[in-house]
Image (cartoon, rainbow, N blue to C red):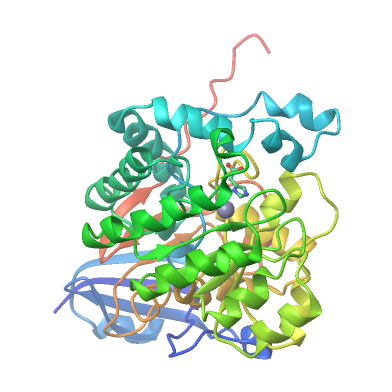
Length: 425
Ligand code: IZC
Ligand code: ZN
């Protein structure tokens, strides 16, 4: 007796978990079962088959999805979910031509969010992050990564990581925490950058002992941290058991991609300005290239990460929102899928693999999330679309209809309220 049978599925999207991420050409293969059905028992997928076999499956509940598609829950492997304040004040500065790094160098940007995050209470940060997280889940995201990095001091970094821990315990989603202490250099440390870096390295033990983060990350960028400083921080983190991530080659090419491959990081993220050598080294590694086309769009730039060249060179790609209050203010991973189609020239098959199995690899959840497989968690999305090409095609809106985590319905679109037409027509 199954708990649930989901049937009459036009397309069931079935990426499979594997020891390493899908690389290069492998990304263009997406397993899709038409006229499918599957069953759930004890939070796990218990059967997958053809719809005409569903009649013979005994279950407590049946859902007829009426020829809509079903996919695994989406995974967003790069977010800055927890922060105070907002930065709409930067819009006119951007319109006047001020760049992201110029705003940061003037004490704005990340540093203004640091100020607001330091001033916010843990409860305020929790409430605010809850609001954004609920919205992510409504877009079909059931697993995500969340970074600290708006503290730049011990107490605020720990406060942010505790908020992430509280979110893990309060919400039906898998949340993977990352310590991003070296996200910017406080103005008070100008000229003493190495001291600041050492302070952040000094926090690794406490964070590890308190089990507050699985990954460590650093912003390797002009005016922030050099490749050498990044190597020092990431090596220290690796020796203490952290998985590694790196904000690499987002604006300038500093060798971040090479460093990610050299240190066997789980992911190198951004990579808009990646060098040929960086591409080659990532291709020879199992480090996932996490691409964030929403950020390129939101920074108003025309040059996107060279996704096609990466795929030709055998890289594994995942896609993420980069949700943050400065360089990409959206919780909508479906919008990122559209940008990947339009701006990265990725195929629909590559895109779906990038927000499921490969995203799982980027945050250490391979085998635990991103697939619909017998014996694995029954975590899936019923879409308001009958085929998987439709989601990147129809952009900027939410196509998720019902979201399930571990066999439980966690979100459902409210029935459309009918417009009240006036009588005076
Ligand atoms: O708040 O601007 N790029 N970090 C590196 C960010 C963007 C987040 C922010
Ligand atoms: Zn980021």
